[in-house]
Length: 114
Ligand SMILES: [Zn+2]
Image (cartoon, rainbow, N blue to C red; front, side, top):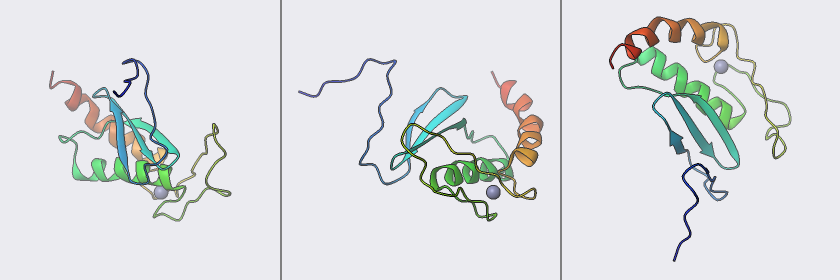
């Protein structure tokens, strides 16, 4: 018999080498690849292709320690229990400078769907 964790606990599968959605509350998502975890904005189907691609790029880059824009984290992977900051190029949609305005432009529409 498999023992299930209480609903408030989230477990990461240490053997998961592939991208895995661990949890989502509709506003944010927790993803895992290997021993790396990423908590970010939920990638909603009603978002524009550009915003979805930017969020996916940010997620994938955060889990890989490097981005298609050329940014990388020295010494990746970070030691257990530590987090790393990935400094995207100013022209990268996955970076704070561009992703913030993209989200701000589309989230009001997404929030009004309820
Ligand atoms: Zn980037």
